[in-house]
Amino acid sequence: MACYAPISGTFPYFASRWVDPALGFAVGWNYFYSMLINVPAEITGTQILITYWDNDSHHAAIYTAAIACFVILINFFGVRWFGESEFLFGLIKLSMITGLILVCLVIDLGGAPNHERLGFQYWKNPGVFAPAGLEPNHIDFDRFLGVLSVLVQAAFSFQGMELVVIAASETESPRRNIAKAVRRVFYRICIFYILGIFIAGLVVPYTDPKLLQSTGTAADSPFVIAITRAGIKVLPGIVNAGVMTSALSATNSYIFCASRILYGLSIRGQAPRFFSRCISNGFPIVAVCSVCVCAFLALMNMSAGAETVFGWLVNLTTVGGFFTWGSINLTYLFFYRGFKVQGIDRKRHLHYWNPLQPGLAIWGVTWSAILILITGFRVFWNFTVSEFLTAYINIPIFFGLYAYWKIMKKTKVWKPEEMDFVSGIPTPEETEVPEIPPTTFWQKIAAALF
Image (cartoon, rainbow, N blue to C red; front, side):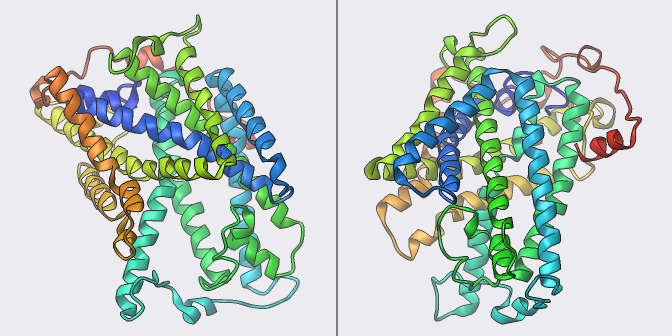
């Protein structure tokens, strides 16, 4: 959808345009809130990573403020500097995970200083599936609950993959470059994430006591635990620095996305108009400033009481991300149906299309609904009102937002024949510039990776 219509507002706008303006309002504000709260959350995470080298609590506020100012400055330089910084952060992340996979493979095969060959022994003892610890008397059911727990954690970790399309309206040759970026994100997940998880399972058992600690630094990482146990020095500090750049990258992205979503809501009249004010080069200054101010909410973590409240706010973003995914997939189903009814050929008019659609979108809607329902399943074994509310209160909030706009504006669900696939959408001739093919060896390598 972003390749077809690279315009401001991205998927909340698509939901308003092709499903129901009320859905666009709900998903827009839901996503904005999720991105906004993740900004101070990631700043706090970055500050905790610094405690790997300096655990003096008196310095925490200084580090937090410095990190906030750093990412704010990057975003104030505009989309070009945002893109350049993300390229650098991405290069560091790819290099780090590649290095960690290779190092841990060497460790597993007995090439570390301790020369201990691990092989697949941890797949047998303690085994592949870790129990959740909720049903110790029914071990098979407990392992199933463990799988559910991992699904929720993994899904939360993958939230943010949709960020690649939010900058479509500010990207050079958006149709070509967004399609290229989305394809490469998929392959990176298959290679780096899945291969990384496979290797981590070879070198560290799930019962390792260090793995079950919670320092917030790279010391918790299975890769670092394996490296430390193998007798390799220096690398853990380097890994911590690499993880810190990843946290900075996430903070940078959340500021960018929250501000652009707020700007998109404003220009559609679903947020106060002053948020759409821009400077001469089109930079949405008011929206960016508003989001950047909230970065300093990270200082709440300096106080115990405020830290608890902040934790609740962060927990609300988990279900919010699943609503985002569900809404994107639902919007695509409407988009697909509109194309079909109006006789528009996807293969001719879309720069990015998948032969498995609409099956993939149905799969996405289904799993988003499942994840929304199971995200807080642990609370039913040790029920507390606060945990139940943080796990599930986003459900009535989302539908409340939808109902509010539906009633206030008397919106309607668009019929396939009424959907507008033309107005305000720039033609390929207006957005795309000729692609310059790589000529040198290193340019070809960079083109393949990025």
